[in-house]
Length: 85
Image (cartoon, rainbow, N blue to C red):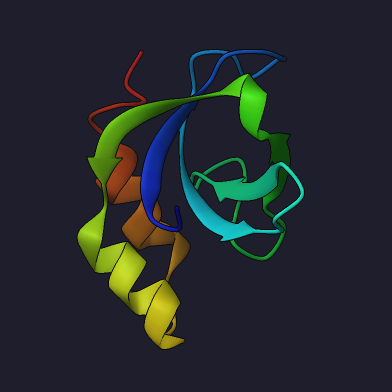
């Protein structure tokens, strides 16, 4: 699940795209967009409030799983085409 592209189905951020950066195994995940929700303080979302977009951000996923540093700017630029309004 880490590295998957998701969009919010509910809440103030409805329609916003995020990448999953962590999962807790209890029906919740931590998501970040690199702009409003940074890696230092990701948003905790219920899985049923997220829509999976059947796309994975492979470079970010590999870095997160390898324990390498991921920058907010990388996430923001990867999501730029999705979060344009």
